[in-house]
Length: 589
Image (cartoon, rainbow, N blue to C red; front, side, top):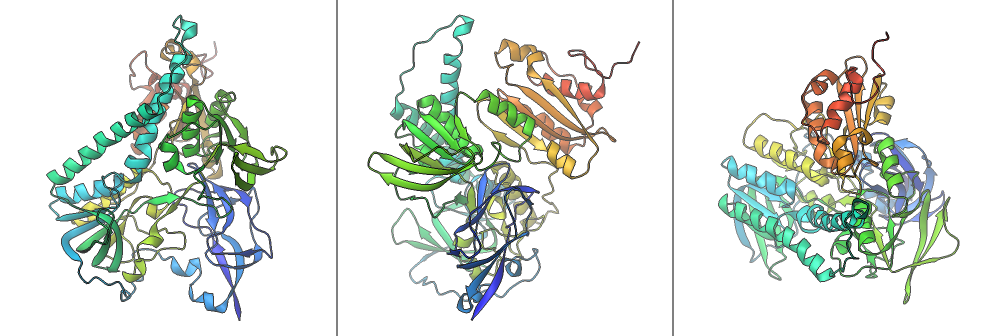
């Protein structure tokens, strides 16, 4: 007996109308569980959507170029009846906090395990997790924090956001030294001491992790090192990563799951080869490969590609879509791409179809619009094709929390799952997978547990690519406004008209773009490209949260000369009061 099941797009969070850039299977193909079906490109990165079951592809209901959303039907797969005990995605995902389920009995042996009790357990000590734990402690709750790393901070602080920014700082200093000769200052070619670079990066990380450890002690948060798995909806067992064979049972009244995500892996890539890197490997900077291939055109790949290009690598990108950072404002990305024509070789609308490790290199064959002929040898390959949530690694069936086949936990706007005393935050609840989003979700979960009536209802979630030049955006993009039927107007201020940008030699690749509702004059989105663009985004984010209109921004006095002025001047263009550029709205005389 066989059964045909539906495969759906997983929860994409706030992302809508996501670009489908590749269909990886054909009708009649036999697939294994977790094999990739399609590839999506969100604002942050490319993301493969795997099959949730093994079987035969019977129907494919999407094609390259489609815009897809959470819950859309991708394909139908014929599976053996024995495998059909696992319900299809649409049967598993439920709106939290409905449909409480009876916790399953655990088979885990806890004999001999130590025991820790707390009012609140937080699983995962990334930015969302430690923020939730510290907020709980500040609100008077006895809190236990479980973290797999020996230091707090999770992926972001230990092997993500922070070490990558330390390396980007090194690369930026090299970039500035290289390009200052036209101003009368000349430097000799830099000598690169890789152990010194790695030590600098590790020193930055250590300062922050030490600080978090001290704050945990100050707040009397109990920290347990290891991996947590649920026994029921009031206890977990922690397999220690600091002492082999040690277990600790943690009991709790309420739990916040902040277990994060991991780099996505693709079945045709030989990940076991040490020359095949994920972002964690790239951050170790043990060597500078002569030729580096980056798979994916998202932020993580672009940031690390920038670092290695400055350290001396020849960097190629293979990107399935038509632009880098798909979903980001097209005007901003166009200016970024133009600025980096000489830095990278980007193969758009192309993908790797085979990767064969050999002694003298890793050989890659490509297919697509810009595929080179024959196999190309690389010294290393960075796979930066998005991240997968860790929801299926926690034995959630034992506590009754609903998790979909992609590891994503459904929550309501108080971060509560379908089990009333268990909450979830951060990457594990879906896109966008951003540390600052997780922090605010963590605060909400902690405050709800403490009895406060608060909700996670942001009007915007900002994003930044720390590339050269930087890209930053918040609110709606122009394409999103168009798709939503908003009567909008775009106001753009070029940094070539900024005194500070000219004096700082960053005017050629800088722009500030604001999007206003044409009827109400309210700001609905903004984006920047240019040096330190991320540092300018705060004003736009606040203006969006406060429902500011063009007049509010234009009539706010901005200090001169600053790059911040560009935000005010972009608003002045819409307002009709700009004097630093020709005024298209000036009254005729």
